[in-house]
Image 1 (cartoon, rainbow, N blue to C red):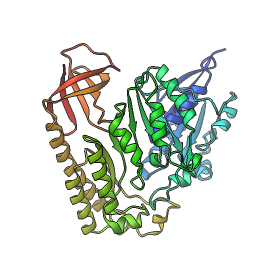
Image 2: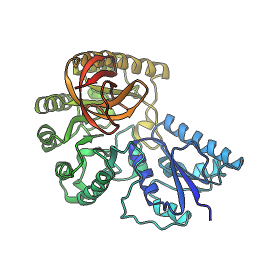
Image 3: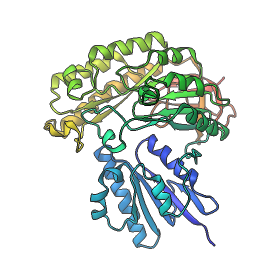
Image 4: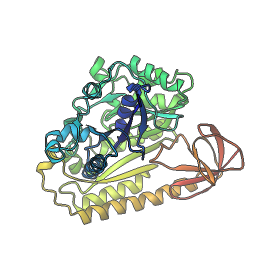
Length: 428
């Protein structure tokens, strides 16, 4: 019998990507030809949706409609929808798009496998790695216990649930056996990890155990929370060479009134102290953060305070979101009184400042030598990253082809030139 083909389309964040890889990892390759984000039309298309912000919701709906149309034309036999959008709006979506064959929430993997008539083992963590084989994301928890005023994640994903240390180590060992050299730890709130298991934070314990795995050379931390960041993790980042001197820690704002309205649980002084501690105790650390502009009631003066803070803090990496109201959140009750035009203008101003900071930081690296992991090769360059850069969102190092290297290699390079978001280098 001809094997059926399955194509999983992943939308949204890296945590969604891990979910897709675990679904693919459990699908029987003797029964299915497996694809991820493929342009090929498959017998079964599984769309793993995002429902976090308006743009992501629109992208998810557009992708569903595109594949429903392909089904009408006979190019696809079944369209299955799972993930955050389906978790949150399933009843409405069923009425709006009845052509979809099946809908599942973000925690419905067992039901999905029952629908496609294949066994499912919830204790199996095998992964079909869709990233370049030398790095992979490791999701250490699910859900969130922090109800920030603007965020719907707790409503979609539920309460915080940590994966046991032993299970994560086993998964990481499996990834290392597949050639993974860099682990990117992801969670909605990294520093709360383990508290639900043992009543104490276990991120430091997890990092120590993961760093013992043969073949893993870099461990990168994504999505920490500013309130109560663990001191023992700061020490490990400073002392353990396998833990990248890199931290992704969304701060959102600096004005005390806005932070209070956002229900963030920290204020300006807390933020300044944390940044100072990180930079004092982990010399050379690259801090990636995210700011939100246009939160309800944000005044020109409050935005200017944020702008001056970004200028003075000189974050190595920074992204900006404009506020969008999310049903069910406490901020949804507030009047969305900052116009879209003003939101965009404020976002553009912040990014213009960050562009200048990034150029200044990058030019300061000219003449220095860095260890770089090569991600890919194009016509002119090998494209890699330092330990201070995460894939797809941060700076890239464009390495001249004056030496022969392979994708997935670690090499030492000397920086010869720089632009706002790229470094140019030669192998040394």
